[in-house]
Length: 428
Image 1: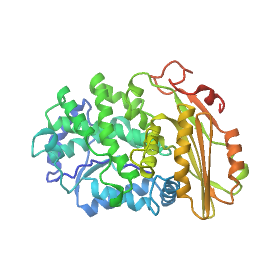
Image 2: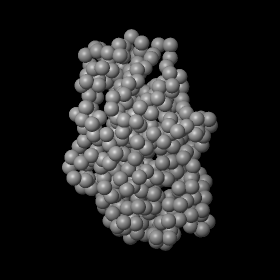
Image 3: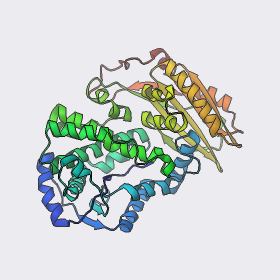
Image 4: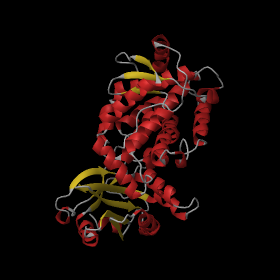
């Protein structure tokens, strides 16, 4: 799925290119970065902006990629039955986005709407235009200095890493925009901003209103958790520390939610490599390759379990996962391996997820869920697939291994605290 660069607040754009030019000098000074090239400023109606958003979505993902992504989400319990991913993404963007910077066309867009986010945080009633401009101009600075389009292309096949990167991008722009309209960033303002965003809901509206939680929650996450994460960097080293994140970005939403995992003793990355399925799946073509991560795992359980279920805490024990989707004719199959920090968490997750899969299976599909050590293997597909035999060969051929991750790693080869090294070794 794709998470676009945009400002959530529905501001009331009334300024023009001259107004944006006035903000440009101030945001350069605050953010300590200079514009390399001019940034065109364009005010658009809601319909015009919607057409641009659709064009961006079409550039980022093909119709087939969106169809498969939506179906995989339904099969795993991430999306409700009947979800059409493209239409829901467009609907959400149309409702919530007031402005955006497009790293492909290098243009800043304002969309007409309303919001009081600037007044709520700064006490100034007339700051919405400035806030939107400062936010989107920060995106332009990011793009000119760090090449956002190239960075986002690298994480296209990893939802978890993509959301984490967007969280940095949006958290940076949100913090800079609010600092600009407040006259500069101080420790008191930084705390006020973080406290404000921490009190916001996890999504724009409940899923019952028609927007899948797995679309609205990740978008809100980028602003709420992303702002907290970037504020942590600013506390530790000012804007230079924020810039440094782009040179070694977080690899997961888990690092965004727990900044100490990034800024302090960063654990090595755990990589899951799936193999062994091709011999039993002749004629099947791989159509998707992805990682869900802690956030999306959490949303699956939130959607399908009671609000006070003890299993809702299990995603915090996530260590890594990899999922592939394969297609043959009109049939779709999912192979998904998830590694946890310990054996008990893997077994508890399997116990909680099995009843969810039981409810999700259809008359033409089934599932197989097994555990080994601290890992869980989920197979979903048509009844004609030999899932029991497939599970055996996937377990035998797949690998879960540690690899280096950036300058802040502990000593190479050192395993993350609490990780079941014996279980890991069984898949190395």
